[in-house]
Image (cartoon, rainbow, N blue to C red):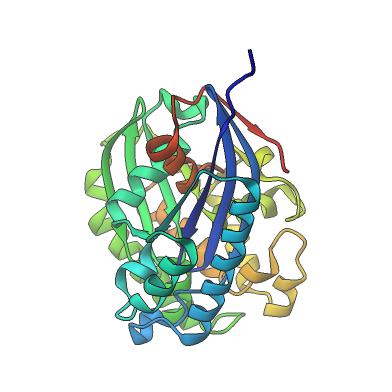
Length: 324
C-alpha cells in the first residue's frame, strides 16, 4: 500500500527588515525543512520618521513575493501562509503592499499583533526539547519591534511587544556607521528606560530564567561569537550562549568599525551590516536593564511557530533540515 503524500506548504514572514521564506513538508510527526531564505527589502526603512513605507521598499517586497510564489508553486505547496508584522501593522500606507500582494499570492497577508507575534515566536523557540520544560524568557529582536515572551512547559504566560526594533533604532539614533557617540548614548538610555519600565516588573523576583534570543540579529551575534562564516547552515548555532559581558565587547567592536568593514566581515551578512550595531545594542540593553547574566541563541522563531500552530496536520516530534 503506497505511503500517503507528505503535506507540503510555504510560509512567508514579512518583517520590517527582511522577508523570510520557508518551504517544508510534514509526514507523520516529522517536519522536513527543504528551503529557508531571508531577503532584505527593508520594508520598515524610515518608517519611524515618516510613518509610511517607501516606494522602493514596496517595489522590492512585491518582487520578492512574486519569486516566492513561483518557488512555492514549483515545490507543490498545498498552501501558502503569509503574515505581516511591525511595519505592516503600523504604516499608514500598508495597503500599498497588502492589495497587490493579495493578487500575487492568491490570498491575503495576515497582519498579526505584537502579542500574537510573540506567542508564535515562543511556539517556535520552545519546540526545541532543551527549552520545553524550563521557565524561559524569549527576546525576539526584529526590524520594527522587540517581543518579550515569558513561558514555561510550552505555555505562554505573558507576551509584550515594544517598538524597539533594529531598523527603527538605527533610523532614530544611529544613522551613521560608525555611530555618533551621543546618538549611541541616547539610544542606550531610551532602550534601557523602556525595557525597565515595561518589562522588568513582569519578571519573577529570582529571575531563574533561561533567556533565548531569536531573530536575525541574534543569529549574527552567535556567528560573530563563534567566528563562523555567515554562509553556514544555522542549525549548529542553536543554544549558543553569550554572556552580557561578551555582548558588550561585541557591540563595542561593531560600533568602532566603518560600514565597509562590517560589510566585509565574514560572520555578518552584508545586508545586515548597517543594522547590526543597533541590533547588538538592543540585546545588550535587554540583559543590562533586566539584570540577566546571559542569553542563548534560538534559531527556531516565528516560521516554526506558524507551522506548529497553524499548519501542522499532527504534533511535530522530529525536525530535519534537508535543503532541496
